[in-house]
Amino acid sequence: MIETPIPVDPIPVSSQLHADDAFVSLTVSTAEAMNPTRRNTMEDRYVIHAPGTWNAPDPDMAYLAVYDGHG
Image (cartoon, rainbow, N blue to C red; front, top):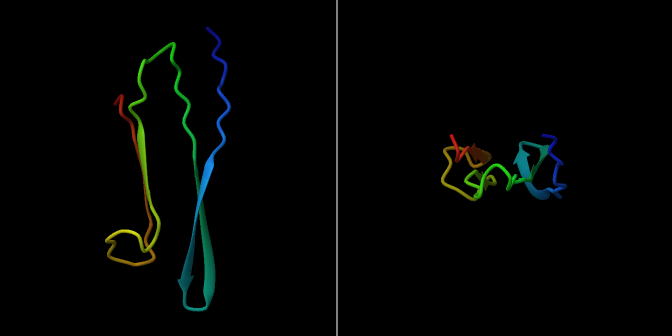
């Protein structure tokens, strides 16, 4: 069986970090493509917390996670 990929446009998430006099930019893109011929539901999830938006031990720390729901 040959599967045809489904085109997905990633959604950029940007954050600017400042450390001393340096400038750092973080760009994160996500995309998902479900194959309905193999599974009826999409159980995978992702989490993105930009620096300064969650209770991190360091204010410059980002949290990026991907969870495989079909384990």
